[in-house]
Amino acid sequence: MLRFILRRLLQMVLAFFGTTLIVYALMFAGQGDPIQALAGERPVTAAQRAYLTEKYHLDATGVGGFFYRYFDYLGGLVQGDLGQSLTGRQISDILAAAWPVTLKLAVIAMAVTVIFGVTAGVIAAIRRSGVFDHATLVLTLLVLGIPTIVLAPLAQYFLGVRWPIFPPTAGAQPSFYALLLPGIVLGSLSLATALRLTRTSVTENLRADYVRTARSKGLRRRRIVGVHVLRNSLIPVVTFLGVELGNLMGGAIITEGVFNVPGVGFNLFRGIRTEDGPLVVGIVSVLVVVYLLSNLVVDVLYAVLDPRIRYE
Image 1 (cartoon, one colour):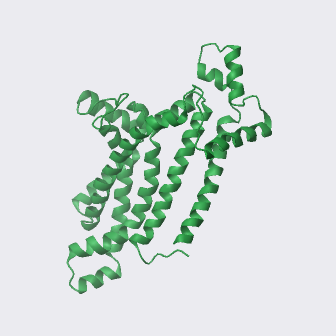
Image 2 (image 1 turned 90 degrees about the horizontal axis):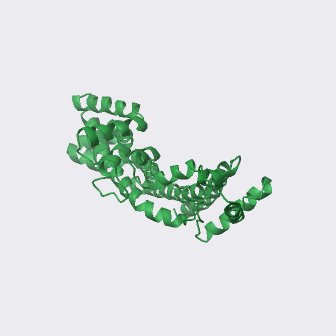
Image 3 (image 1 turned 90 degrees about the vertical axis):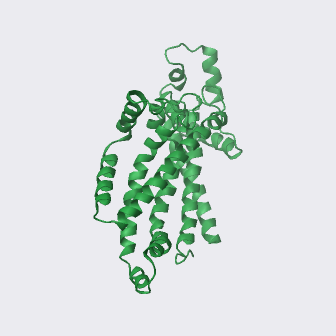
């Protein structure tokens, strides 16, 4: 197991550098005028343009200039310096203000997914072909068929405006209750997928030979499902939840944009819109680390859920 973790850590380093290189190239290759894009219609003085050009090495052109800027960025990143955005703010300060909001949103979405999605999936598998099973399949199909860009405004209008159950927007310093509706919307797609995945996995394990053996020995159905079936069925579910946790920690751009949630996704969208390359690359670099660590934790949990799994 130790060798497996070390090997995965080395793979994570390669994946990190490869991903940041691609994102850096996408942000700066073929970019127009990032300084003017930031200023909008306001004029930029020659002194301001010269300062920003020298600060971000925008005068270095060609392949050599690109790699010079990239390795200069990596040098600061290795030292924990994410750099500054084109607005002059430290990217670490922007993330420090955005992460707590996105973390709360991700916790709400993940709680909705686990509590309702996994639980409903187990019930649907146990009562297969029943009314509850058919109802959940139809509802999850509807949820999966509606994109977030449609689902979020609908939830905002009906549950925030027409029937003011939740605040329609989160605001600058959102409370837990203000984040509840966007968290439910963010976790709805994950809930539908987790429900279907749990139902399929539990159904397959209920037909396994070890379940019939346990029944023949006189074990109660509750113990068979709760101890044996559920533990084996959680392996694909944990894989999905681990990857989905990385997505949720990144913050959903559409959800945070619709509900005005000042999280990571909202700042990432703002950086893309204003062509703020340092901000986009800095946020994505941190998100890559979150994704890689989430996948590593999921792989380690395999051996906990199923002792038959061994890593060489």
